[in-house]
Image (tube, rainbow, N blue to C red; front, side, top):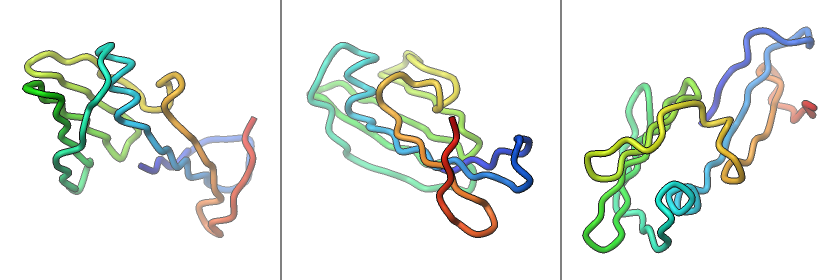
Length: 105
């Protein structure tokens, strides 16, 4: 998932690439381990991932804007920014024009 940061102290646009450890995130949200990826679907605005643990089903949707939702069964467990997920997201920042990695404190 990528998000372009429009305003910063830099004189160029920055892209934030976020990698989410979704099974770990589901464990954190549900208190249950063993979630297995059983499907994924890419769309213009988001990527959706289906998980299963026994009879339980979960869906993680990562929007290209940086927003995410997690539903387990009929219950929404998370609806917010992917960048604020504690311990399950690895962020990398790049110059949007050159693709060069940059460090953001």
